[in-house]
Image (cartoon, rainbow, N blue to C red):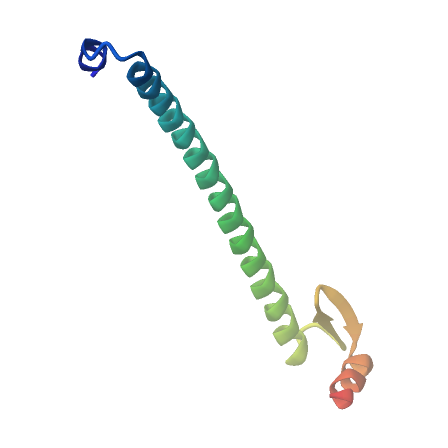
Length: 90
């Protein structure tokens, strides 16, 4: 490609080809960066889901009596009486 562009003896065409190559390289770099960000967002979402499942399991176990007289709610242990009051408010 360089030979073809140089054979035109058009300096602006040579400059444009070099600029185009730099932009393609920059684009590839940004694309890799974006892929890394998307992977991080995905990983954070999966971790949130894992935590949510764990909290819901703890609540379920508490509701069926396997954890004493308290319920885990939003990662905070709440006395059973307070849970009843909250449910009556709704």
